[in-house]
Image (cartoon, rainbow, N blue to C red):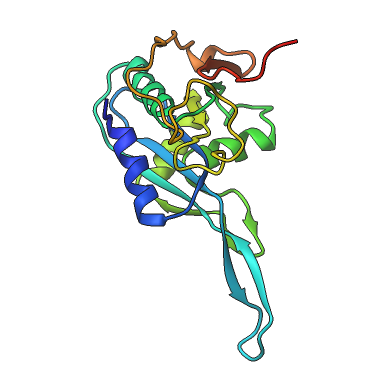
Length: 214
């Protein structure tokens, strides 16, 4: 069953021709605001160290962050899309993070870094290069909202189109590393992020190992 998120991921796979390590989707707790889809690629680019000579270095391909503008009234609307996409792309599971506001007094630096990264803005550079190629026009506004109200992030690691196809041990997968629709799991309620005392994680399991449990 095609969803907007699934269509976006598959179109990026065709355009980039690289395997994926992981896919994430982030949203702030305000209905009908944009979400941010991030695709983490497995691959390296060759970079010359000097204009003269043949010395080169290899850098990881930057992740791609895309703003997704779609109507949603409840987190269930987004999570349904995420569940179906992760299911059809053969992911072992879908992880949901409910994150506290990171703009609060006493917040740790890593919380801020994670929040910025979730919405496509790199908090750090690697060798002077950004870790994202971002097309998120409202990224700064989304980060500001997340810093005050918290955010939700869904993450999965696809087998179809991913780097995990050679090591996947999952009897629920079709030969191409995918699953047929529809995902059998249902969405679970999201807590109000600004009321959280600690971050909350929820895992939706999809896979089933081929190995016998001893």
